[in-house]
Each structure stands twice: as structure tokens, then as C-alpha cells.
Length: 485
Image 1 (cartoon, rainbow, N blue to C red):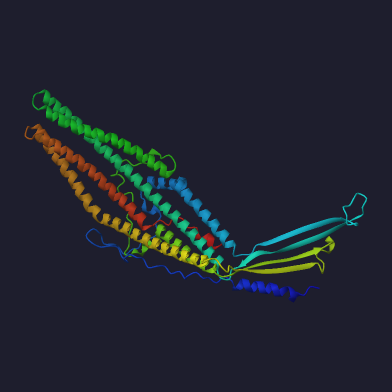
Image 2 (cartoon, rainbow, N blue to C red):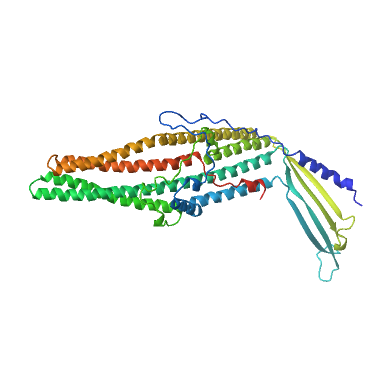
């Protein structure tokens, strides 16, 4: 009969070592204070901010135009950069699970049948020698070289891998947010280029009429040839801009096709910037700049900082001995019928301790390296916050002044249109020279193009503000890791 107490002692000792394991030598992580002011800048360039904080808005809550929403939805399915980001998440998830598995013992089982045949004379047997055949059956199972994580080395490495996964997930969110912003910007740019094409086309038509008018006046001896040549300058400039606009529109479609990852239906393209100027809604920035801490790129930097902090614990633990445990329980018998009978049971427990007595200072150098990497990650994190603050501040400054600029440019176009109409009438009446008409047409053309650009800036500013505030909830895969799925 096997003594239960005799078997239990080594098992209890092994379990005690396991329970004692898990202490961590990693520094306690505390989120560093943001190296920026707690509120947004104020001044003449900024509008008063509402007290409403930015919610985690998805793009379809901000984008009002159904055509743009459809393009964004298609891109979220087809865009290759987003697919790469999703694949990187799966790689990081698998790496974390591989690392976490080292916290658990590897249990192996084995069954063997050993048959031996030997002669009675001790020499090499012949066909006539008498021989015996022996058979031995063995069944065993146990733990193979399980490291008892007394100093938290494996747990620290597991924590580092987990935070690398979270950083990869945040990077995917940043890719998604950038993609949404890039598609909206490219779509609005196409709308502006359509408007610029329309302005150039209208100018080309007016210039052609001016050429016909001055040509007729030249034939009648009323106007000099310089008037005709000056009118032809405006015509040539408009024709050149028309060609450039056609190129720009084609390139805009190519850019959208790349971003969407599939051909773009022409029905989803806007006709003008005037038509879609209100296609993106306002995004409240709130009063507190701490909203930046949830930006995907800032979260990515913080998770990388957490991972670097955990690696310090692993480096410190490497200075201490590693304790491993190998154990086996099994049965062995020369007869299969008595394999599990009393007397055939056997067991073994083999703990081992590995410690590097001399490494030439490599262990402590590893700790210093991990601490320096943590310091670099901290600087990267703080730099990400400062960059995010600057981007939001710039977007808020642009939003605070773009309304005044748009009103001024609209008034400028109205005044230029009236001036062009009046100067042409005075020219036809023989009061003003054609050079006055030419200057008025050029001023009108430039004012119209400037107004289109200002409308584009206003629309894309809303996109920029949404992107820089990091409002899109994006991807979130932490729940299944928390549950171990």
C-alpha cells in the first residue's frame, strides 16, 4: 500500500512554491501628469468653448452626408492599411497568449511498451539459441521544467506583452481615425476642385465673349489690338486652369479609390463645395484638455510606457535565481494486467535552481537598459500629448477665425462681381479703357477661387477637429482578452 502522506509531502511543497510565486519587482505604474495646460488656449483667435465634453462619437454621428458615410463604410471594409492594422492586433494577441502560457505548467503524458530479447549464453544468439523476451509497460504523466515565478519575471513579461497588445490595438484605432479623416478630406477636396472647375469654366466663357467683343471693336476700328491681346490673356489663363482642374479631379478620384480600397461610384461624388459645405457637423472640444488622453496615438504611447515599465520588473527578476520544477507520476509493470496494481506506482519530483554567479555585469546592465527604455517611452508619451495639444489648439484657432474670413471673402466676391459688371458697361460706353475691365475680371476670378478655398478650409477644419480630438470609439478588443477568450 502506498503511503498517502509520503506522496503528499512533495506535492504540497510544490504547490507552496507555486502559491508563493507571483510577486513583482516592476515599479508601480502611475500615469504621468500631462505636460500641457489643463484648458485650451484663449485669445482673439479662439471662440469660447462650451462646457460639454466630447463624447466618443462615431463618424456617422458627425458626417451628415449619406454619400460620404457610404464611402467611409466601404473603406472600413476594404482599406488595406486597416486590414494590416487588424492583422497586427491578432499577432499581438497571440504573442500575449503565448507569453501568458508560461505562467502555467506544461503537463505531458507518456505511455511506452519496451520489449527486449536476449540469448542465454550472453553471446550473439543464433537461430538455435534459446532466448527470453521481456516486456515492460510504463504509463506516466507530469510537469516538465515548470519555472516557479517567485520574483515575477514571467508575470512582468506577460504584463509587457499585454500592454504591447493594447498599444497595437490603439494604433489600429489611430489608423481607423486617420482613414475616416483622410476620406472626408479627399471627398471635400474633390468638391472644391469641382467648384474651381466651374469657376474656370464660367471665366472661360466670359473671356471668350470679351475676345469676340474686342475683336469686333478692332475690326470696326474702335479698339486697338492691345485690347484683343489682353482679352486673350484672360481666356488663355482660364483654359489653362480648366486643364489643371481636370487633372486635379482625376487625381482626387484616384486618391479616394486608394483610400476606399475599391472603385468609387460617381454617384457618391459631390457636385461642388457649396453643396456639401455643411456635410460635417460641429464637434465640441469642451473645456478640459484631458480629453487628449483618450486619443488613440496618446493611448498607444501610454501602453508602450506601461510595457517598458513592466520590462523593468523582468530585468530585475533576472538578477535572482530561477527555480524550476519537474515532476512525474506513473505506473510500471512487466505485465499489462498488473500495470495499475499495488506496487507498480512510482513518482518523482526534481526541483532545480539556476543562478548565474558571474555575468560580467550583464544583469545590472539589463536593468539599466530597461530603465532607459522606460525613460524614452515616457518622453514619447509626453511628446504625443504635446503634439496632440498643439494640433487641437491649431484647429480651434482656425475654427475661431474661419467664419470671419468666409464672410469677408463672400463680400469680396460680391464687390468684385459688381465691379466687373460696371467696368464692362463703362468700357462699352467708351468711358473706361479695356485695361480696367481686364483688372476687374482678374480680381473677380481670384476672389472666386479664394472663396472656394476658404469654404474648403472651413469644411476640412471640422474634420481636423474631429480627428485631433480622437472622438471615434474605433476598435475595442480588450474585453475578450480580459475573459481569456
